[in-house]
Length: 219
Length: 342
Image 1 (cartoon, rainbow over the protein chains, first blue to last red):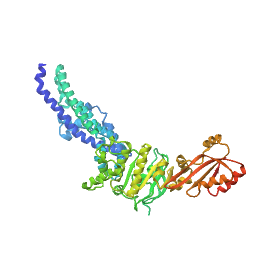
Image 2 (cartoon, helix red, strand yellow):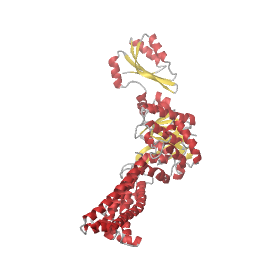
Image 3 (cartoon, rainbow over the protein chains, first blue to last red):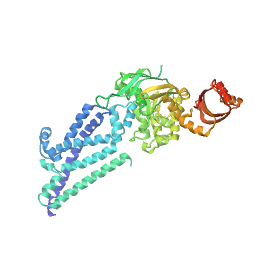
Image 4 (tube, each protein chain N blue to C red):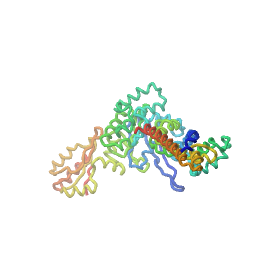
């Protein structure tokens, strides 16, 4: 317990690092995933910008990258991180890995949630002469907004989970804190302090996500 | 010139698997719809009528033939030009297809925004439309709070927002109960008579055709097999498909099963008389039978009225001596179509 009090400043810093890594990864990965998810949905046969070739290629890419276990992906994209953001270690390199990892998962979630919009609703928008761009932003996304919010909430928690292995490439965060100062030094209290903070963070985000979705869905 | 003209239009979808023949949804259809008509297209599901109606507002593109709307040839127009055309054609759907993320107001406003109508004009236009469909009080409700009939009214208001010349109704009442169906059909009739909108109604229910259409096309297997004034098709269907639809709503010559039941209950000769619109005075039939001393009992049939014109088939059981009956029937062939039951 004394050990934990000693480590408190580090614990707060680690919590902040988790929020920072997951937050940036969610913003960047979220936007990229939205774009890729929209592309998957729109090019799907029978949909607004039907294009079988593009759809097939995108589908194969997503299916290739999505099942890679994150701890391996993080190591595998390290050279790419060096090229893109100039470093292969630390929090920013971990963010790069998180973006790559979440990007494909988000695109799939986005695609699946957009598929819940009844095709007839899109047809109705087409029948009044709306352009594809207008349909996407004023019909498709608003109609799927509730499930999309829940989908992003789900992904936020998955990315928080993924961020726990950031220590592999020298990143920080609560996961790294729990392993380095709790697990390796035989201090269960320290490990559990990190666990509790993660639970609080996840509960908080889930609560926000649920209430936003409820507002949007009006129930 | 007809407002809508389809000539030799075909719509085929590529085969699902290689080597299979393509699916032909619409097969060499020619159809002309005049301005001000309420034109019904009736057929069973899979007859191609939903595809046909989507060729009119270019939601589907034909694989052959020519589609002309208000003098404009749609084939060859690019997507941007087609969007412009669609703004002049409203459409309502069986499943309503309203935007659940928007209020009633928002649904009706959507086409106005798409058409780029200045915001200042929205207020008046939307409130006029909501008055017309009787949903002023629900303006700010979300559509999941409405009943089926109210949803279709929103659909109609949305379809009429940009004052289109044409309204396409794709099975618009098929998801509604009989009473709501009557309300919605009444509204569609008013759209036609008060605003002069040409209405194309897709349906599988002959009742719908009878209550609002003046012309009808019967579709089967991607083709239009019969076409004409509703009265003519009802009173004298020429094809088997049309006869089947008419028989569903209008009592006609009894079929074999009905005949067997009738025969078991009624002695004497069973004869059906069909007549249409002033061609026969019913009383002429009864007078003639009376005069010959032939007894008769009305056992089947009925009289129909379509927009003030009547037609019908009545089936009588005749009793009396054979010679008198034959003589009476001979005379009556002049005034009605007679079918003698075997």
